[in-house]
Amino acid sequence: MKRSGVADLPLHGGRVPLWLAERMTLLGTAIAEHIVCHYGTAELLSRLSDPFWFQALGCVMGMDWHSSGITTSVVGALKRGLNPRAHELGVYVCGGRGKHSLKTPQELRDVGARLGADGEALARTSRLTARIDNNAIADGFQLYLHSFFVSADGEWAVVQQGMKETSGLARRYHWHSAAVRDFVNQPHTAIVGQPQGDIMNLVDAQAGRARQAILDVARGNPERTLQEVRKLQMPAHHDVRAEDVDLKRLGGVLAVAYEKNLRDFASLLLLENLGPRTLQSMALIAEVVHGAPSRFSDPARFSFAHGGKDGHPFPVPLKTYDAGLAVLRRGLEMAKLGNGEKIEGMRRLDRFEKAVEADWQPRADFDSVLRHEHRISKSVGGRTVFDTAKSGGHPRVRAHQQWKLFET
Image (cartoon, rainbow, N blue to C red):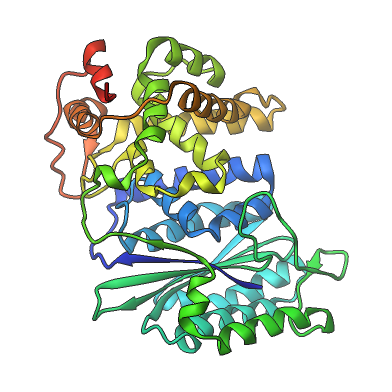
């Protein structure tokens, strides 16, 4: 067991407005359910333990693309959405920010009692990861958020965040019980116990290497320890800039959304007749569900799905957000009825977008993309925390305007 990643983020204040928080809960839950449906709970925990994927998830959900608040809001949304259905999906979310983090041990004991697992061992693991990052790693960051994701078979991931007011930064730490660093290797570190489920027990003789790993991290040089994990360093500037985005990857998404023949084929893959703006969002959501780890090196790109609550890179398009949510829910509902065609459409869309990117190699014109998004903002229900969704334009954008989204 070892820490799987670290992210450094600028400290931001403010709150998530209700109109966005409710949608984040619905979208985060739908994305998690798609991942569990396709790949299982181990895959979801593996992704949550990757700092780049976690950041991309927050961006596609409409949060500020690089701020510290992305951690609190994503964890809160997943806890609200997943816990009422934990018995069905097999994933429980414990802890949270401030006083909620203090409840983590008891919440884990309660989860253990429901699963027939060793809740006390889970609580001890929670305390150990928190103490290592708060006390044993002398990096000056004091934890104020601790969240613990645990599956029905005892595998877990920890996402926690500390603050360093003198530098104006927050640091997010990711842990995974299986020490998974990519999405294709999913070993479990559970010990088989009673028939109610697998039991993870850190005090068992077979868990000696896990205990030793914790001690090695605690005793190790802090700088060396942090160098050995995946590290995400977000810039100080608030606006999204061209250098923050892989323009070829964004170009592939835009080509699928706005080039007529490609758009028609993408809609056919999804079994949905969707407009270009919704297809743009769906292509990015599909990548969050099905993409490989290397695809998340530029998490700012995923803010082009639903913008950001602060208006960067553009206001949150509520009509597009709700349309995409409806597509995700319809796919999941059809899958429950035994028809998996619609839910498979997301995987087909992701493959198609990657093929377009590779074959066409389109490159987005960053400035034109932003102008386009602000021009259509009013027509797609653009909104920010400041309620200044005044930028907009005519809902119809002519073809030659659409192709200005690409460099020539």
